Image 1 (tube, rainbow, N blue to C red):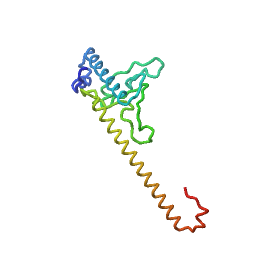
Image 2: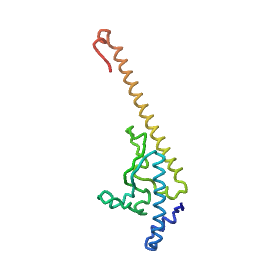
Image 3: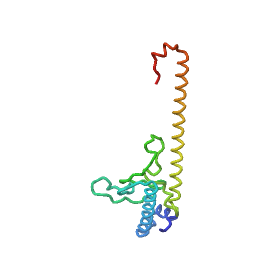
Image 4: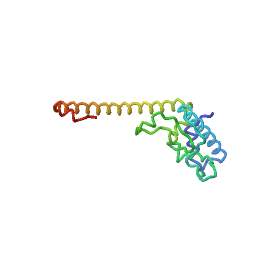
Length: 172
């Protein structure tokens, strides 16, 4: 697949000087790269999908199917938003962490300019997984500290009670 350079993206910023055929060629190139990246994310996360489209797909949800939308350099300058019927296997999604899955709604636009975006996707996923692991560990440490503190308080209370009083009081 041809490389998408920043110069090619800049061409889209100047639509008034861009021919229709050149715009179609650039959009076809970008659409191919977006699909390649999306499939890589699905594969690396062991996810699944039925379909996906740019979030500017105006026909989405109207019962007539999807046109797929189109790449809009102004809207997707920093982040390419996608919609559709897809999911990712995120082993951390059930941990109630306040860390968003990095590809849940799309991906950073700069990925389309990389020769091998899969390496960057792997790096982003690794950083996400690492953050989640640290957050889980932090939560576990907090829970351990709470449990230890509770045990210390119960122990201190028990020391102040008589044997007779301890018979009537149960600690959880």
